[in-house]
Image 1: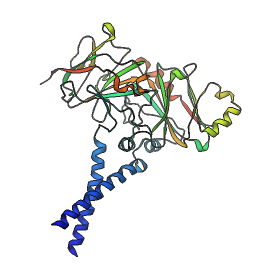
Image 2: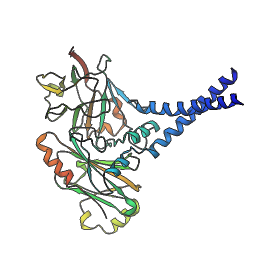
Image 3: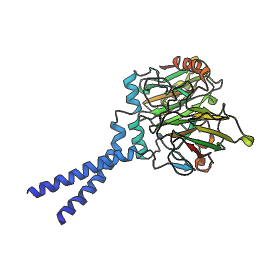
Image 4: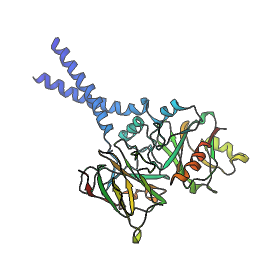
Length: 194
Length: 180
């Protein structure tokens, strides 16, 4: 009798504990089922739409996200540099290459919750395409890091891990299945502060 | 021993079932979704700003620090909703979300004939009524037809640099969201 009760309690503990904790684990991970990976960048074209998978829908509800619509734009996140290491605020990176066609784009540094980093100055940790200098053939090269650099510079302050978010606004690639076919700039590590 | 294994197996199957049930229930019962957060901040048809760059924690998490955003909640069961704002930031975009925070419809300033923000959200039945006799106020409006009852309107305005702060702030602060 006691054994049956103990076994029942065990079954319930595994079922409820395991079921609930696996949901929280799945929802706290930043990558989703419908992620599109391009180079080191990740996009979620379906997030926040009625077509999204149940995990994305639950994450949208739990975090109170109001995702960008298709006519607004699409965001790409980078967590790792080209060598596969986590992006850090104490390191300098080079962002080089071509950005897909869009009316304009913005690039900003964020923490793990995707909130923009505070640069503690009047200058935000963000750049947009109307203010960057171009190379010939429309390529872009941006220095990202804590130390001032000539040309385009995205100022980063503080320490710890960071994410980079590249958002293309009013772009045709957000509308179609063309998201996977685009090329995005590469992020290479230049140097790190000890 | 065999009974213990049997119990663990049953527990794991149960965990799978509970995983699916909890996952599907989270969107229905979340008190932290965008609608609930906005409901705590303001009434229906009240415009709420949520900007990343302003000091206090925003009501709804907004991504891009180069954007200012504002939202208002509406209920089409009470009548159509008309939103407009004077002025022209370098870029603005509008999204209509349903009660669960899913993006139903979006457009940007290129959709407006003269670049100003002026639109009406209505159900197909209400649209039939509007089309019969377009009142003067709606003459320049963009019409968004949707099957929603409750929903959220979000307007985002691009702030390229500090000199645009005031203009884009004024654009969103003077935005109206009215029930007709």
